[in-house]
Figure 1: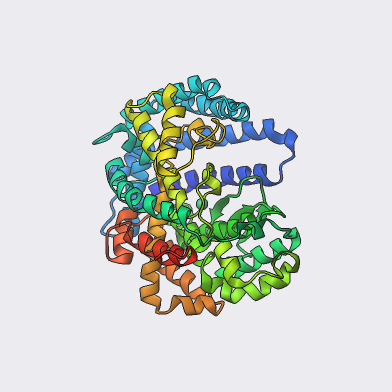
Figure 2: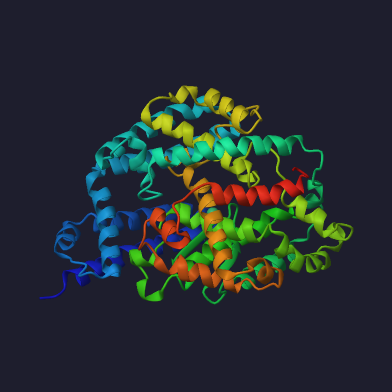
Length: 497
Ligand code: ZN
């Protein structure tokens, strides 16, 4: 009798290949597609999504799941467990609700885009209420132990709970707010304006490409292109597409953007080819995915050792902008901390406070403790209290992010979790690799990538995020490595004791 697991695996691969085709269409749409292609593309994508959904919820998968056995093999166990998780999520939710959600989300995105342009939350509120209602229904169908938010969070950070995240965030908030305040009052201040001088695009392209290569990004198994919003999309470990954008009068955008996306890309290229199109060949969670990008962008890319090596070259590349700027001055500028209204432009410290604001609001929205109509007020109050700055209108307040307009509740916390995971992983890497600073200072980034590949990337979905952290670092996730890192880094820059 044929092995039911092998039959299951073949079906999983078909589903994931369909997904890869959808990804490729998405990449093309965001990088190369002519504007008029949008209608045909939407039809092609809808067809593929329907085909995939049909296969994902087919009773055959349910039967094969019942008959399949892991036989003590961790790869089989992972593939069976994750397929069951997705299958159960998919079949529990009625297809009418799935369709209604998809319709409302795509409509929602359109309405949100206009509402944001007009800075008019009231124009978006009815759609958001409807979406929220549908997501609550979805959470009820999926089921949860403590609160409906957990069922939604599970889509992005499997196994995490709101309660556990709230605990971490409360500690983080308690330690970060005073630090940000002390920095705001510090007399020693970086000169941020040097990053807004003229940085020719060609030089930025050269720099981004060189950094990605040094990190270990394989250009034979990936590409770097341009898009409005940077992203990374992966078809397999041998075909990973990342993008960036260039601003000749804002240097961090492309340079740190490429480091960030290349961090995601290494995570994708680091999986084992034999697991392609299966859960073992996928990433664990968005938080773990983000930990890889943030580590390369911040722990490495905004570190002093990294620029000790690269700064002389940077000055040659941008003589006009950096000719009269010293390394210390440049290093301080790229690590400027300043409360700001827009999350995507926030520094390493206040970024987490932006996330805490969103997490607290969306948790209250899903549980019904907060009404949609009260979002702008609640948002502005929390921003004032946590970040120390009050939005002047909804566009720079509660309408700035696209996530809720597409029904993505439970996504935001993964960004801050990513920062916490990154700090804890990086501390473990430093312990394991000895003087990691020395290798970075010497321009050798390979040891870090090798370590990440061995301890994180190649495991795919084998461990839940929490388990992976314990396995790699010997401890459960905590805010301590992050706080140690930011205190050691930012206090000297701002001349704080
Ligand atoms: Zn990212």
